[in-house]
Length: 65
Image (cartoon, rainbow, N blue to C red; front, side, top):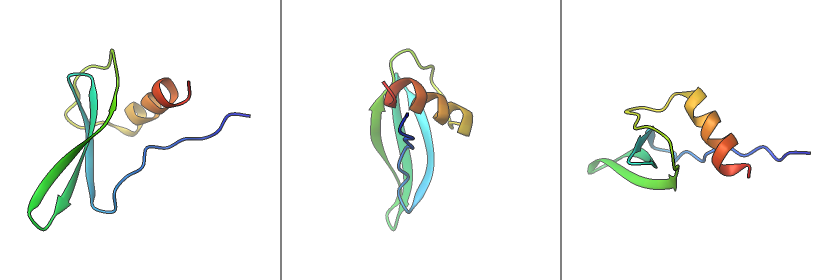
């Protein structure tokens, strides 16, 4: 049986995006918008804002291996 994995979102989450094959998360703080590197995603194109379908694909291809 496959284990279901989801990408954790911070409580102050804004959005996920991909730049140079790295998945990032943006989140809001009292000092403004910040970001954090989440995971390398080799072969993925740059995305300004990842859709739910994109995130599901990332989980399937990069987390469930």
